[in-house]
Image (cartoon, rainbow, N blue to C red; front, side, top):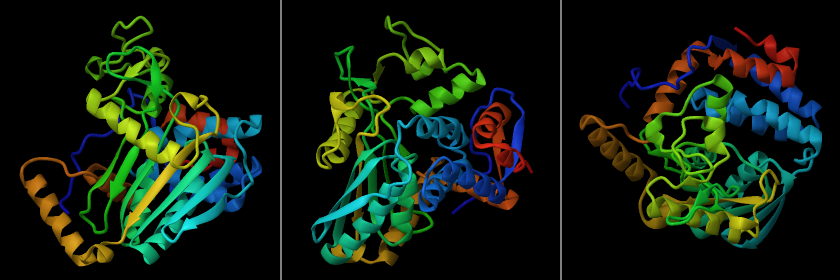
Length: 351
C-alpha cells in the first residue's frame, strides 16, 4: 500500500482542534456508558466503534454521537443493559433480536454468527432486528474481512429519501459496506444520500454550510446550504434511480428479511430497524485467501497508478497518522459537548 498523507481531511470550519488520548478517552467513555446502564461488553463495543471512526477520520460517527446516545438512554428511548438473543434458523442462517438497544453489540454478535454459518455452509448470513443505529457499517465488514471472509454489511434507517419523481419520503439512506481479506482489499462504506445524516449534524454543530453542489433543498424544494434545513427536508438518492434502488435493496435485506420495520413503517428515533451481515468463505468458493489478497492488491495498484483512490485508502492513511500520534483530533465544540454529556473524566483525556 502506498502512502496517502495528502488525502483530504474533514473541514472543521476554523475551530480549534483538541488532541484526545485514545486510551484515556476509551476508559472515560466506557465508564460513562456503563454508568448510563449499558453492560460492560455493550459499552466496550459502542466506544470501540466511535473511536474507530475518529481514528479513520470519519467524525460523523465518533464523538459527535456521544451526547445524543447518552441522552436517548437516559430518556428510556433506547434500551441499555440487555444483551441480544440469537436464533439459529438454518446451518448458515442466524437471526438476532436487539430488544431495542443500539445496534453495535447485536451487529458485532451477528458477525460472529455469520462467520459460524460460513464455516458450515460456505456462506453465513446473520440478521438483526429491533435495534437503533449501529454506527459505521464498515466497522463490522472490516472485522469479518480480518477473519478471512468477504463481507457485506448493511442497515436500514428511518425514511429520508423520496423515490425519483416523488416528493414524499419512503425509504432510508440505508448504509451498505463491503470488504475482503488483505491489506489492499477494498473497504467501502456509503449511505445513499449525498452525505450522511451525521455530516449534516456535524456541520450544524460547527456552523458550516453545505456545499451547493451537494444538491440539498428546503421544504419548498429550493436549494439550501443550511444543514439543519436540509436534514429536515426531503432528500433524493445519490445517483437517482440507481441509488434509490440500492436503498430499497438494503431495506429488503436489513428490514424485510430480518423481521424489522422497513420503509414507511420505520418510526424516526425508534429502535425498530434491522441489520444484515453476509460472510463468504473464499475457500468454499474454490479460491484461497492468498488469491483474493493478491487480486485485490493488483486491482488497488492499478487504480492508484492511474491517479485514482482505492476504496479504503483514506481511512487507512488516517489510521496510520492517528496510530503514530496515539490521539484523535476533535473540534473543540464537539469535544466539549461530549464532555458535558460524559463527564469530567473525558475532559481529562485531552492530550
